Length: 284
Image (tube, rainbow, N blue to C red; front, side, top):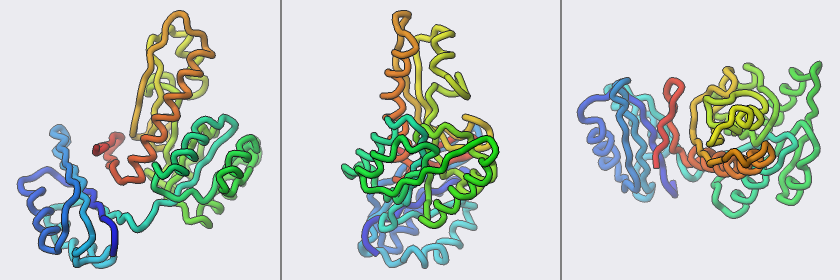
């Protein structure tokens, strides 16, 4: 198997974890490229990400689980293995604002985002030209108050037929149902146009302006049934002043939204994010 493999681990903290994993990989011919770890002392949890070159490694992705399982059981490891030879398949969902979509498509086209984007789903036709320019199939699934369940069923069928791993909400201005979310746990990434937990829900720039804040932000997080409350992957802020109007906040915010969402997706598809509870560890 060519390329690299990445092992992600969460376990109760204990002596010898790093040595045990490193020794296992060494015994099977791994050449470690990157390794990082973190301890949450309050939760007594250990987190690890280790990536190695598969050249000379004597296990395949299929045989790794069988051989590694004894060590994982002994050390009580929660783990997953990712291989670079399998590119993540990402669907983008968008409504009418196209700035995040345009940025993601540019970064994908330039090679910055190492994934496949087989389709774009929208509840409007506004962004079809962007999809056409990038040669990506575009599906318009209009939503009304009386057809949301049927539309979500159609959307889920589209995602399944395209074998989607991760869904990105690039300013998709609809609240997903619990049924939809349950099909992609910790695999739906949203961009919210505020520095959460401040100003959840709709019109956060207007509410920030009314509050007279001096900083506005953007937050990318995994989607859960609790609105704008999933584990946070990335955030950033920009300073505003009394001279700025709502339109200025929106303009400044667009730049943040693009950057924060693209970072979150890149870290996710590079397998740098571990979630626990309502928190994340994001390895450099």
